[in-house]
Image (tube, one colour):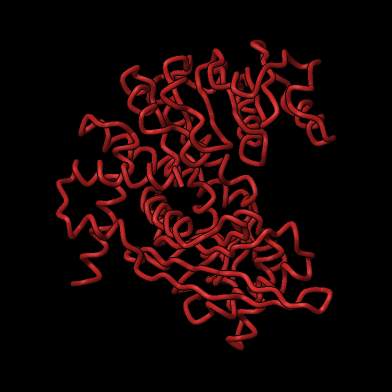
Length: 411
């Protein structure tokens, strides 16, 4: 998993900056606990199938473990461990009181019916129930899981415990204690960070030219927000191609066409089609990779025309490209800061459930905006004071916060 290799490099670089001991470094390389089980379910035809399952609890010095559960054919212990470690860093960067965890089941969910997926979700909770809970480990949706599966998992957990416990899982449907705004939180949070960065540069969103790679949930919402804040999306791409328009793309119109089954670059009435990679090198002020990892590499980093890269995807910039962008004075807002809006609103859902409240959308929005802007300010000031990049600052600040909490727990 390339993203975890990059993660380890970033941790080591931050550890060097902080002059950490080997013992302190080991805190960020070794999980607290690796749980595994084999889940057996009855299929719709009466047969049985078994699937490997994992829950990796990486670090809980700052609060309960937190992280999604993915159903994916490539999910394995190494991948889940990597993602758990990244969650610990991300929660520390935005200064919410969670640690890092991740779960996974090695399964192709496309081969299972809804009933079979529900039974798999219940089997997962039964396997790990003793290590889950509002004050212990709080799961959430991830790849190929969704609010409906979270509701099933909550029901199974409450059945086992014999009590209501809505705060044991987040990303639930609203009728089961979910929270307004969770579906757009990742992109919303990223744009709040971008606004704060532009203010530091004495610029605003008004008239800013932005290229967005990815037209899924996060990319589409980021593009909508740029346009609604007075910016222009001059390039938008999905996996099939790019649409270019220096006057600004009509985002709603293009996304409507995409929803009908077309690709972004088929919307020729709204721009000029180009290949899928064209978005990376398009003329813009801000590039938002919001889809895949490793899309900005040593091969194309020298051709970027943007002055800011906002990492909404996980690991879109390779370390080699990162160094080249730094040398070119292109600012990179790292993924552990830029895309932390999702886990931040999950934290709000956890608070909502623990206090038996229902937060308004306005309250969620205000708290998310303040949290993301505060996180950016902390990282930017840390970077400025030490003459380092935002990525180096984010990791160093997160490591500092986790180590401080660890020492407080020991004492």
